[in-house]
Length: 128
Image: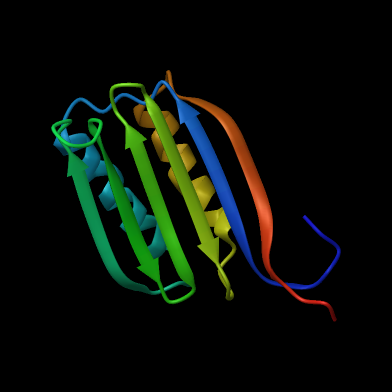
């Protein structure tokens, strides 16, 4: 955080022990991301999920929900149990609200999930 005015914020969350049994679980998180945006003031403008089977990339997925204020993303290395989520907004939506929505539901579905970092960073810093 900074004391300079900003026009946006970015919340990063890193997890270990993320267990995704198959692509159905990837789809569940992707749907959850879209649901988190839907319950916020932001508007979804595009969404995409790319599962990786391990043949050319490590097994897991990358997912993005583009919003009118920026984006929500998730990236998972399924074989290592690593999951990274970021929520970036530059309007009326507080990214922490979306991040908390995702975190609470992830912890309910995956009780062994460990949040190793949650960090908020101001973005679009101005000099004024």
